[in-house]
Length: 409
Ligand SMILES: Nc1ncnc2c1ncn2[C@@H]1O[C@H](COP(=O)(O)OP(=O)(O)OP(=O)(O)O)[C@@H](O)[C@H]1O
Ligand SMILES: [Mg+2]
Image (cartoon, rainbow, N blue to C red; front, side, top):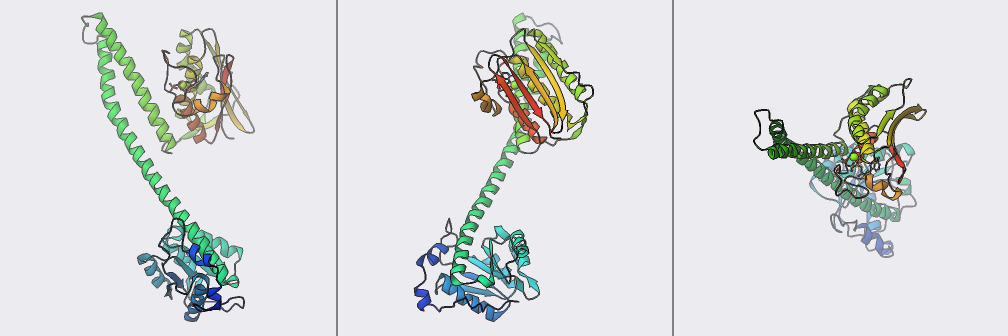
């Protein structure tokens, strides 16, 4: 203990004395009522100091601050304080920074800091910035410079500390609940993925066998066609399950990016090759910038391919026959830019936020042969954001759409 609690500004009225009766009633009442009321109004206050006289002095100040009838417990060292904090609940603990050879900060850390069941307030000899930072890092709810210690100041600090602590506990509990819920969701999705995919693979494999009459001709033509329909629906369902899983995985931060130096021209050419037959079927021209001198892009190759394919599939889907699709790429000081532009139906400005949200679609989808699920763009958005980049949509109804992926430099 390096600081004697004999500040001249400090008053130490005894219980029921004149200073106690002139005390603002709210000092006691509100200090004992954190939101939600924690240990109740009557919980004791713990004073941790290695100097017996200082503990008594602080106790007197406390009685002046929060009422003469407050129960005050004393602890002379870290071990005793830790034992009490572990086994009992206190309205608040006032801990001296220097506990003989021990540090009050270490006690705060061992007690759990901000998630300790009791709000921990540190008393320091000098409220320097360094003390302030160290106290905050250790997890105290507040700290008081002993030079400032008056009953009014103490009452106010306790009141705020209880309130802040109650809020922090609630936040902590909520975060834990959310983490548990998120883990449960991931577990559920992992199970669902397995449970859906296994039977789907059988459906796809056997319907393909029948459709293609691998083991011999099917007697009735219609049955072979139905097998083709089963296969197409099964494939669609599998895509859907995979999309939902991808999005859930990215959102849960479980999609691990493996960035490599990607040759953009080759990646774009690959994606265009996949989309070309679909475009050709709709008489849509599809092309790309030469991208010859473009420096390599640091990105996850699989994610980049998925982003390009999702964007190209949208461009094909939402462009009328006779239209064009173009992929452009460039790099400036801000980083790489990849844009897929089409001359399709476009998106109303008011629909942009919706189409970027999972399952959000603009315009009627019922009756469309190629109706999707509304997961393609949200997946692209999550993937580009996982790269530290962003997605931009520039669209005009009836004119076309440009979706740009901006990668960070
Ligand atoms: N290039 C585009 N031109 C016009 N509208 C588009 C374009 N790309 C996306 N949209 C609109 O955004 C919606 C959402 O796109 P998204 O890719 O997320 O879903 P989807 O293509 O409908 O289904 P999925 O991609 O899951 O198969 C689309 O339904 C469409 O309304
Ligand atoms: Mg799509």
